[in-house]
Amino acid sequence: MDRIVELGPGKNGWPDGINPAVSPLDPATLRRHGPTAHYAVIRDNQLVARCSIWTKATPRYLDRAAGVLGHYAAADAAAGGAVLDHACRQLGLRGFRCVVGPMDGNTWRRYRLVTQRGSEPPFFLEPDNPDDWPGHFQAAGFAPISHYFSALNDDLSAVDPRVPGALARLNDAGIRIRPIDLVRYEEELSAVHELSIAAFADNFLYTPIAREEFLAMYAPLKGYIRRELVLLAEKEGQLVGFMFGLPDVTQAERGAPIDTAVAKTLAVRPGRTGAGLGSVLLDQFQQSARQLGYRRVIHALMHESNRSMKISGRTGHCMRQYALYVKEIAA
Image (cartoon, rainbow, N blue to C red; front, side, top):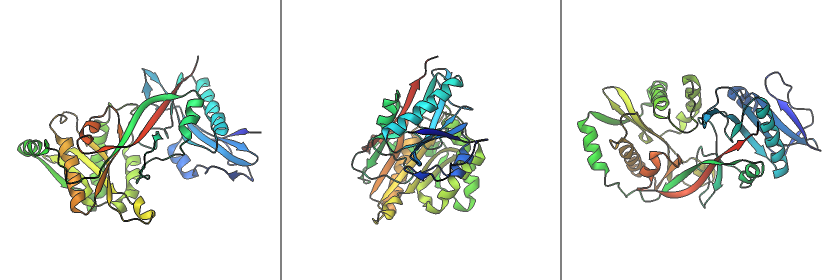
């Protein structure tokens, strides 16, 4: 018989004698992400499913505050359905008429599910999931709300023909592009955070994040960075765009040479769009990767409506697809 245990603020820890059929959520992550509640399905003294809900500072969907469901894991469809149904009932009791997920509180953290895997293995910092999890959400009454794509450029000799003209215009406008200064890493990240808040404000289901949490998220990445793969575009000392990328170190974990770089985040300050800065940043990133000896670049996790999809399409081809889901809750 399945039973549901609630953890979180004011709740008890795990019951004694529980074995994990799915990995339990790290307590430090639970504290840091601060969900309203965390639910676990226990079957025969085994943890077989889990998820969290958020009810404060949640994004808006169709002019309504959306309940958020994340930290999802399930050993099978029955356990997944049990925890999803329970979480949605709890959000409905709190007045929410729609639930989005999986999303670990906001879009700065892990969210989405892989829906079409393709042949490429997971890359560094990519969210991954068992192939049956999208079916768990659909069986529980969720439907895709948005789609995302990762693309692969396996020919770094290819150059976007629009780039030389755009680069000349940017130079004439006084915009210069340089690699990140790792000696001033926190200061550089603070500028990246400020620009990100401005650049992503109109993104789908966006909510802002505090500078302190942003710095804490990026601090562990410092040891993986090749400075030539983090490019900052400035005008008169102000950051107007950036391209944040990293080597795909998961290749080394699989015992393979690292021949791929991941273009993780591309952002341009509002008012600079249309000038070609995004295209130039991606092109210079890819050329830097080639000069460093990489053979391929992954354009990571692009929303279907973002301008980055158009820029990526000039040199990359789709390698993976993802979806985020929504469920309507009856009043």
